Amino acid sequence: MLILGIESSCDETAASVCEDFRKIRSSVISTQIEEHKKYGGVVPEIASRRHCENILEVTKQALRDADVTLADLDGIAVTYAPGLIGALLVGVNFAKSLAFAAEKPLIPVHHISGHIAANYICHEKLEPPYLCIVASGAHSHLIEVLSYTEFRVIGRTRDDAAGECFDKCARAMGFPYPGGVHIDRHAQEGNPLTFKLPHPVVAGNEYDFSFSGLKTSVINMLHRADQKGEIIDKKDLSASIQHTISEIITEKTMGAAEAYGYKKIALAGGVSANSGVRAALSKTCSDRGFEFYMPELSLCGDNAAMIACQGSYNFAAGIIADESLNAVATMPIDSIKF
Ligand code: KG4
Ligand code: ZN
Image (tube, rainbow, N blue to C red; front, side):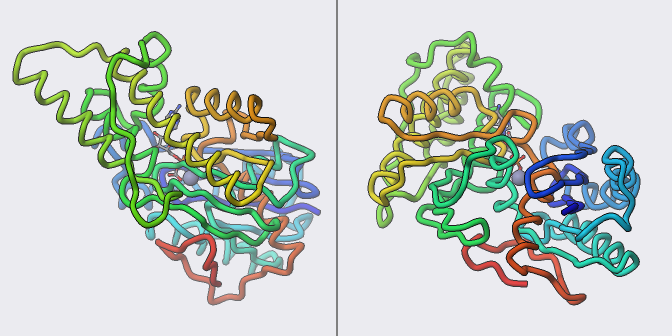
């Protein structure tokens, strides 16, 4: 089975061909980061325009790299939610037209289910059920992966997502967008115990996340230092931020795994590239006898291989869209609608 995947939910235009669920025949990503960097974040209209310009060539390249033609495909999968609406619309409309012209089924994919599926590409033996912590620029979710196509959210972010917290702290420290990776780099040479940063107490659901208090405390610390003319060591602050976020993610994930009876845990989303989060979860899982899975670095951020892989599972489960498929900016993974 050959599935073409198309991704355009944020600032990466991507296409990929996946064979028999987990084998990636090609994966092409055109990133717009350099352009959005100038504005300190993604500018939605620019993102939509670049997707529009790039999506055809990226798709042609993915087909060429995989050595297949449109006729060889069994279906065309596309991210339709959640994300920047103008960006999603480019991918959805393109995939819809391609599916119509090539007379192939159109397969809708939820972006977060795609991030989770990145783990199937890297781990041949991983099968549901398991608990997945998805941490990206817009989400921090603890998700029960009940089957390849069924999900239940048991914890979500109340305010800033983990990636957003990394990026906003990084911005306050003067690092360029997206700042998460700069905090990661600086943290390598810093002391994580230099600054004591707050762990949130979230009333109501102990598995929900809140990162805005941590962000505010970092911003206030930088302002105070600035007013007093003091210099804060960016390496130590980066290491302290990374250490605190890694601890919060690890504590919540392990607590939820124990409460819900999961011995298998996976990490997904852009923040799964963070070396501190990867190390903290791997070590804790191994110390406590849990199986742990995470994507290889190239599959942590947005890509279409994960969409093609999840699209294959959706297709096998009969999840096919009709011609009225629309893009949706906000849609929880456990209330997927077409
Ligand atoms: O999943 P993703 O590529 O896009 C969304 O779906 O949101 O996640 C992007 C997020 C950004 O906030 C980015 O700063 C963060 O993932 N990120 C990192 C690292 N690499 C990417 N955060 C911390 N450390 C990293 N190494
Ligand atoms: Zn993403």
